[in-house]
Length: 369
Image (tube, rainbow, N blue to C red):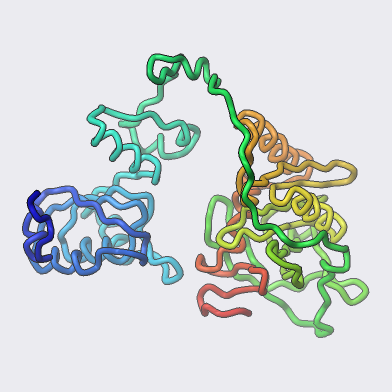
């Protein structure tokens, strides 16, 4: 077999003007930085760039005039903001952007090596990508066969499920209402709060003057300023507390252990008792999403790493839909996807203000507040 190892300069020399090149890694991480610089040195032109999540390498190629089109789900600099060259080129019309998701890229590449014209993907239905990608077509699958055997029909799987051992790391005890008490500072001063943005990973950092009673801060539903907490799921530790705007919840609380990146328990609610009940429902299940108000309590257990269920997919989908509907219609949340928004409120690397189990974190200054 011919040795495929060659000098970087020689390898880049194989790239022709107009080629589509794929760049691996994730924004800043595991990127082909040396290869990118060599492409620029060799003054390649009119390249297409394909990347799951683009970052500085893609931005350099665009800034150097090497690329005229990109296919990606995102190009940016994480906590440092947007990619400046990419943004300028898009706004000026210098490059063509093909909106992708990570799934459409993966299945597109798989279709190429399988030598088939396309592969189906259900996950993008009802998303805005279909509004900007007219080449993506919708169709109904009546039956699915594997090795000549009917495995799905009319949208239902016929594959027999099998139980398996659940793997998890969930070691915290149930909480008491006193764990969620947020002691007031004793001074009449504003404190920082998170402002959630519907459909966005980023948040705003705002100042607020929360209501206090008997020496403790409380949620203020009239001004949509609610208490948010993060509970360490791996060990018993003090509960981190702050405030958040724009969830719109008028009664009760919601909680979830699907909370990037550490997947601790994040909860938002109007009072400590509701927050405690929502959190303890998740703890009892060793992971899940929950919602409570008045005498109504719902929980979807996620016992596999606190992130996934070992139940049949249709059952899980129905349970999640019921909880989501309860949060919006009965509890008043104005967010399109309350649990999705909640899941990113502890992701510290995304600006501007987030809450971890260790406290409030300023993504711009990159330090705890």
